[in-house]
Image 1 (tube, helix red, strand yellow):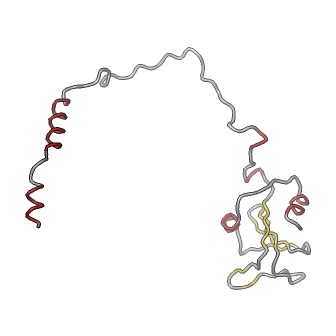
Image 2 (tube, rainbow, N blue to C red; image 1 turned 135 degrees about the vertical axis):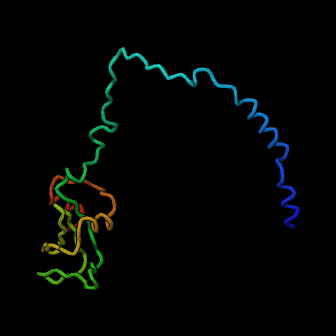
Image 3 (spheres, one colour; image 1 turned 135 degrees about the horizontal axis):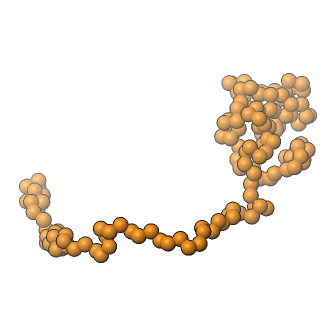
Length: 147
C-alpha cells in the first residue's frame, strides 16, 4: 500500500506542471507602476471633519459619567460560603446591589444599606447585564427596580 502512495507522489501531476510553466512565463512580467513610488495626491481642500456617529439622544453615558449603577439581586447572596444578611433586619434575599466610586453597597427591601467589602467593581461587571435604563435620580432608579 505504501509503495503505491510513494510512486504517485514522486513527481508533479499534469495540473502542477502547467502551473509551474505559467509561473515561469510570468516571472519576468511586472505590472506598470508596481516598482515606482506612489505620488502623493494634491491637497487642495482641508480634510472634512465628521461629527459623532450617533445623535446625542442615542448615546449611552460611559461609566465615568454616571454616579453609579444598580441592579436587582432577588436570590440569596452567598460570599465565601456564607449567606449575606442585612445587619439591621436580617433579610437575606431581594437585594439591590449598588456600584459607586469603586465600592459595592447592598440595600435590602426595608431600605437598609451596608457596604460589602468582599465584592468589587469587577465582580459587579461579571454578574450584571447591560443597563436597561438611565435615571436622573436615585429614587427614580429605586422605583424602576420595584423598591
